[in-house]
Image 1 (cartoon, rainbow, N blue to C red):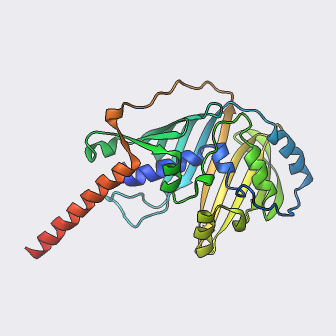
Image 2 (cartoon, rainbow, N blue to C red):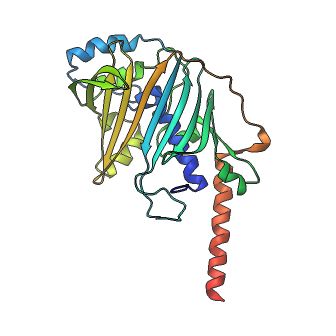
Length: 295
């Protein structure tokens, strides 16, 4: 497998990708509850589409999320993603009740899967079974999933709702600036593209501090169909001279959704327990390296 990931990187990447694979999750990158609204000028075309988006009921959707993973400096034969590796999650999401099932791929090769049942995420990675006693499933609560990618819980998905795009409307209306780019085509659908520069002052504290320290900016691009459906959402974060994009496509709505059940407990480990296991393995490896160097 090209640029094979270490188990912990897979867990973190899957948690991040799971949140980004949800339209509601991508949408809630907006103002924290109670934050003052800006006097942004919303283009007339967007105002009309926002009214449709705000009241659009969607129970299930087929989604695809893509995130370009940053290189870690490990080249061929290493255990880290190489430059240009793309983390992709593809599957179905239920908004009411809240549930998600996706496959997880890196560089075009499937490395695992993820499922969400209510407020709990389960990430499947067969490679970690060899280090944690044969348990390939990692269980994360919603707060743990948020902490895994260094964000405030308010940045992750919001619970079940048949109106999943209301948060996106709030995000757009709380932006620092909005521009109508114009007509485009996404996944064969005619859409209108808009870009918004988000205000760091209105983000949750942990995200605001992270970007402020690195002189960061966050841009949101949405591609909205005439029905009000945000067919594509792109979040671009720029900091310290580098940028990263996370793209979410809604490929279809009101699709069949499979029945989900939690993995067997004997094949499941919590994210925090896995982190401790990996930490102990690292300590042992370091001690062996020191002893070998002394001998």
